[in-house]
Image 1 (cartoon, rainbow, N blue to C red):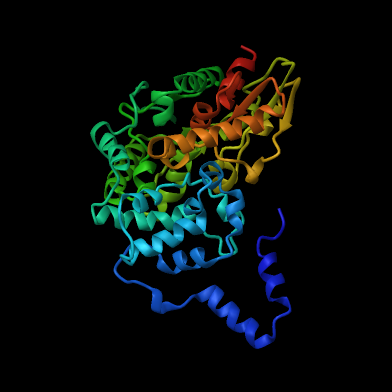
Image 2: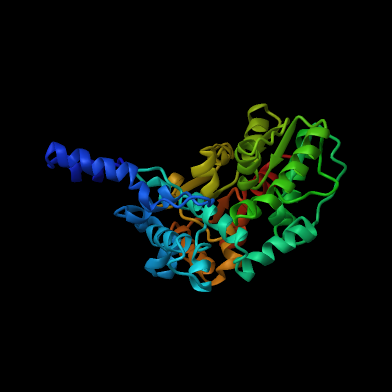
Length: 389
């Protein structure tokens, strides 16, 4: 990817020095008279995003799916500005503040390194405080506060082991086969492992949707359980759970004592220690990069795992690595804008299927739910099926 600031430099290159300095001052600092105080939203960031030439729009999967300028990164920021200043209101404008899959593709192109998801989070916090939350969004909060998990809980344990496997909401309710594959791997390597007695959601949906008080309740409870468990390591199959435990909780001053790793990192470590070996597999796979692993955590050991299985050929989709495309399930899109989420998933399926591989492999349970079409493996399932007993 070319330098995302190149267009700025090119535009300013031939300007007179005084005009260049003035342009950069306004471009970088904005005009503070437009700032509104006493709100959670970062109005400085909103204005910069709203008035930017908006190069990120060409990589926004929500805009591509809906073909509506209002859901583009800058479009949402403009509407956020008017909402926060009470210029506009109503359900439609408010609902647009949730038209984001939190994939951070926009950040890859932004000269300010803005994440539109982060900008919108402050706006959503204000929406929560003003009690203007759309019903579909409120229902997610209500379900979590009632059941402490989205969906139904399928896995239970005692939380008494060196390694705690944290399955997450999607595996518990929709993708139990991934959890079963991980438990098979733990058994194969002789790991002292267990699961929590009553696993609660990591809290990310609450955090992402602006319910900060409720999120902190989940975060404090989870941290207390982990810290009292005597576990040395927490293994998660969901990249978002890893991100929340290792980045968001600490930002809130909530620390987890055990180390937290994604399942791909744990599995690769077991392979490197000689605890997992494979038989030959004659097949081709295309790997789908989950957004959170590729862009937020910037660490995904899945390709190294696949390469360690003899006979497997990896094919790369045109958009891969940090240029991956969201599966449509990010940011609770499947619950708040279901049609858009489905359109995003269909577009990504076409990109992956164009590689004519025997199977798709990914390392996120939500990605499997969204993109499963024909043979689809989570990395744990591929390992569990391929390892020599």
